[in-house]
Image 1 (cartoon, rainbow, N blue to C red):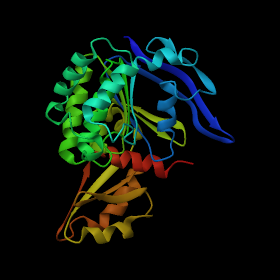
Image 2 (image 1 turned 45 degrees about the vertical axis):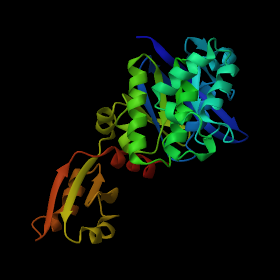
Image 3 (image 1 turned 60 degrees about the vertical axis):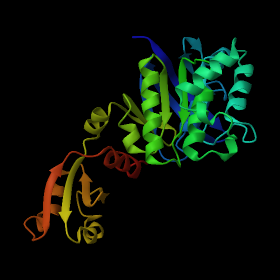
Length: 302
């Protein structure tokens, strides 16, 4: 198995604060990995170290077969990096932006490459439109076009779908999986659990440390979490009563149902007992959601 990213002990400090604390990451070529964690957890810092924009204070390993600490410039030429904030020129058209990026990379036959990229991302009819006049979804699509124009081997996406509508998010992910099928490796940070579930594997960072990794099923299984679901009328009034009960680590809503989670089965069963058989309520055990697991990890962090 060829690894696109294979780093150990990745660490970054800013003064006395350790933003990334000895993280190990091994991402196989051609897979899509989700990078999750709350704001300030170290996701963006990790991504920037992997693509050579930040120097690591500690750690060894490779990115695309190159030493990520000593060959950063060579890595940059083979990586596409899409930042959280739209970072292209809003007073240039879509085509002008892509042509400028093509010149930066010194691409041969730039016109043909830009035409192909515009067609692949569905941007041909909008190519003369100013980037500053685009909606969030079209800006996102243009940014993806610019990041893949030079045929990178690794794509790093930092919360790329924040603030865009559901259809734009779906279309974006269809394109990501198409790129992955063609051999591109993708590492994407996101706050959306449905997006995390589209990834081959996920890693969860908290306080600069990696606290969970694996497929969605593996992460849920490793958590040891037990979840009960309560459905029915006025179920919203039960959350406050259940929160803090012995065995209950977390009680929160998942759609119209109340999820009650913890690791102490006996305590949870005792907490559920008063509601079993109550008219208008249905209580049953369910598979924990990814959101249940991540909230549990976050609340139990030291």
